[in-house]
Image (cartoon, one colour):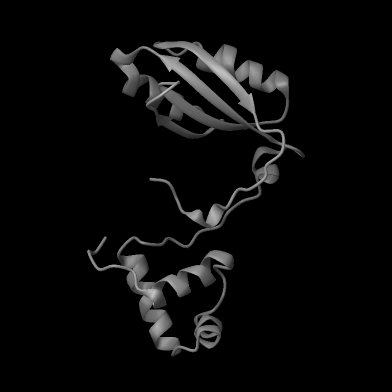
Length: 156
Protein backbone atom coordinates (compact mmCIF):
# COMPACT_ATOMS: atom_id res chain seq x y z
CA UNK A 1 0.00 0.00 0.00
CA UNK A 2 1.27 3.46 -0.72
CA UNK A 3 2.18 5.78 2.12
CA UNK A 4 -0.28 8.36 0.83
CA UNK A 5 -3.12 8.94 3.31
CA UNK A 6 -6.74 8.62 2.28
CA UNK A 7 -8.33 12.01 1.85
CA UNK A 8 -11.96 13.09 2.18
CA UNK A 9 -12.73 12.25 -1.46
CA UNK A 10 -11.33 8.72 -1.06
CA UNK A 11 -13.36 8.22 2.12
CA UNK A 12 -16.58 9.44 0.50
CA UNK A 13 -16.05 7.10 -2.47
CA UNK A 14 -15.35 4.20 -0.10
CA UNK A 15 -18.56 4.94 1.81
CA UNK A 16 -20.59 4.75 -1.42
CA UNK A 17 -18.90 1.50 -2.51
CA UNK A 18 -19.31 -0.07 0.92
CA UNK A 19 -23.07 0.36 0.63
CA UNK A 20 -23.29 -0.87 -2.98
CA UNK A 21 -20.15 -2.10 -4.76
CA UNK A 22 -22.12 -2.34 -8.03
CA UNK A 23 -22.75 1.41 -8.08
CA UNK A 24 -21.38 2.85 -11.32
CA UNK A 25 -18.62 5.42 -11.40
CA UNK A 26 -21.11 7.86 -12.92
CA UNK A 27 -23.60 7.34 -10.07
CA UNK A 28 -20.88 7.87 -7.48
CA UNK A 29 -19.59 10.94 -9.28
CA UNK A 30 -23.06 12.44 -9.55
CA UNK A 31 -23.89 11.84 -5.89
CA UNK A 32 -20.58 13.32 -4.72
CA UNK A 33 -20.54 16.12 -7.29
CA UNK A 34 -17.26 14.92 -8.80
CA UNK A 35 -16.11 14.19 -12.33
CA UNK A 36 -16.59 10.56 -13.40
CA UNK A 37 -12.90 10.37 -14.38
CA UNK A 38 -11.90 11.43 -10.87
CA UNK A 39 -13.96 8.64 -9.35
CA UNK A 40 -12.64 6.06 -11.84
CA UNK A 41 -9.03 7.10 -11.19
CA UNK A 42 -9.47 7.09 -7.41
CA UNK A 43 -11.02 3.63 -7.44
CA UNK A 44 -8.23 2.26 -9.66
CA UNK A 45 -5.60 3.74 -7.32
CA UNK A 46 -7.35 2.37 -4.22
CA UNK A 47 -7.41 -1.08 -5.83
CA UNK A 48 -3.78 -0.86 -7.01
CA UNK A 49 -2.68 0.20 -3.51
CA UNK A 50 -4.64 -2.74 -2.01
CA UNK A 51 -6.82 -0.38 0.00
CA UNK A 52 -9.97 -1.95 -1.43
CA UNK A 53 -10.97 -5.16 -3.09
CA UNK A 54 -14.42 -5.26 -4.61
CA UNK A 55 -16.04 -8.58 -3.82
CA UNK A 56 -19.37 -10.27 -3.18
CA UNK A 57 -20.60 -10.90 0.35
CA UNK A 58 -22.68 -14.05 0.55
CA UNK A 59 -25.67 -14.69 2.77
CA UNK A 60 -24.54 -17.11 5.52
CA UNK A 61 -27.82 -19.01 5.19
CA UNK A 62 -27.05 -19.85 1.57
CA UNK A 63 -23.38 -20.58 2.17
CA UNK A 64 -24.06 -22.97 5.05
CA UNK A 65 -27.26 -24.48 3.66
CA UNK A 66 -28.98 -23.69 6.97
CA UNK A 67 -32.13 -21.63 7.45
CA UNK A 68 -30.99 -20.12 10.74
CA UNK A 69 -27.23 -20.55 11.20
CA UNK A 70 -25.91 -19.64 14.63
CA UNK A 71 -22.55 -17.97 15.05
CA UNK A 72 -20.37 -20.07 17.34
CA UNK A 73 -17.40 -18.58 19.16
CA UNK A 74 -14.79 -21.16 20.11
CA UNK A 75 -12.29 -20.14 22.79
CA UNK A 76 -9.52 -22.69 22.49
CA UNK A 77 -6.99 -23.42 25.22
CA UNK A 78 -3.85 -24.85 23.65
CA UNK A 79 -0.25 -25.75 24.47
CA UNK A 80 1.89 -22.66 23.96
CA UNK A 81 4.84 -24.59 22.51
CA UNK A 82 2.89 -25.48 19.36
CA UNK A 83 0.43 -22.58 19.27
CA UNK A 84 1.08 -21.49 15.66
CA UNK A 85 0.91 -25.04 14.33
CA UNK A 86 -2.27 -25.74 16.30
CA UNK A 87 -3.88 -22.48 15.17
CA UNK A 88 -3.02 -23.23 11.54
CA UNK A 89 -4.63 -26.69 11.79
CA UNK A 90 -7.78 -25.14 13.28
CA UNK A 91 -7.87 -22.49 10.53
CA UNK A 92 -7.82 -25.26 7.91
CA UNK A 93 -11.04 -26.84 9.19
CA UNK A 94 -13.73 -26.21 6.55
CA UNK A 95 -16.32 -24.96 9.05
CA UNK A 96 -13.99 -22.36 10.62
CA UNK A 97 -14.60 -18.88 9.17
CA UNK A 98 -12.17 -16.96 11.42
CA UNK A 99 -9.18 -18.02 13.51
CA UNK A 100 -6.63 -15.98 15.45
CA UNK A 101 -4.11 -16.42 18.21
CA UNK A 102 -5.03 -14.35 21.23
CA UNK A 103 -3.75 -12.70 24.37
CA UNK A 104 -6.05 -13.19 27.33
CA UNK A 105 -8.43 -15.96 28.32
CA UNK A 106 -7.85 -18.20 25.26
CA UNK A 107 -4.81 -18.97 23.15
CA UNK A 108 -6.91 -19.28 19.99
CA UNK A 109 -10.29 -17.87 18.99
CA UNK A 110 -12.25 -19.44 16.15
CA UNK A 111 -15.62 -18.45 14.74
CA UNK A 112 -17.96 -20.74 12.86
CA UNK A 113 -21.58 -21.00 11.77
CA UNK A 114 -23.53 -24.04 12.94
CA UNK A 115 -27.06 -25.21 12.32
CA UNK A 116 -27.62 -27.06 15.59
CA UNK A 117 -26.19 -27.86 18.98
CA UNK A 118 -25.37 -31.36 17.71
CA UNK A 119 -23.32 -29.91 14.87
CA UNK A 120 -21.40 -27.72 17.31
CA UNK A 121 -20.74 -30.69 19.61
CA UNK A 122 -19.46 -32.73 16.65
CA UNK A 123 -17.14 -29.94 15.50
CA UNK A 124 -15.71 -29.46 18.98
CA UNK A 125 -15.46 -33.07 20.16
CA UNK A 126 -14.46 -34.77 16.93
CA UNK A 127 -12.71 -32.13 14.86
CA UNK A 128 -11.09 -29.58 17.17
CA UNK A 129 -10.30 -31.71 20.23
CA UNK A 130 -8.53 -34.25 17.97
CA UNK A 131 -5.93 -31.66 16.94
CA UNK A 132 -2.64 -32.10 18.80
CA UNK A 133 -2.03 -29.26 21.25
CA UNK A 134 -5.70 -28.50 21.96
CA UNK A 135 -6.45 -28.87 25.68
CA UNK A 136 -9.99 -27.49 26.05
CA UNK A 137 -12.62 -25.57 24.08
CA UNK A 138 -15.05 -23.05 25.56
CA UNK A 139 -18.06 -22.54 23.31
CA UNK A 140 -20.46 -19.64 23.06
CA UNK A 141 -23.39 -19.24 20.70
CA UNK A 142 -24.64 -15.88 19.52
CA UNK A 143 -28.38 -16.00 20.03
CA UNK A 144 -29.22 -12.70 18.37
CA UNK A 145 -26.90 -10.55 16.30
CA UNK A 146 -27.32 -6.92 17.28
CA UNK A 147 -24.82 -5.50 14.83
CA UNK A 148 -22.49 -6.92 12.23
CA UNK A 149 -21.14 -4.36 9.81
CA UNK A 150 -19.46 -6.27 6.99
CA UNK A 151 -18.39 -2.90 5.54
CA UNK A 152 -15.99 -2.36 8.43
CA UNK A 153 -13.26 -4.03 6.50
CA UNK A 154 -11.53 -7.23 5.73
CA UNK A 155 -9.45 -8.45 8.62
CA UNK A 156 -5.97 -9.40 7.49
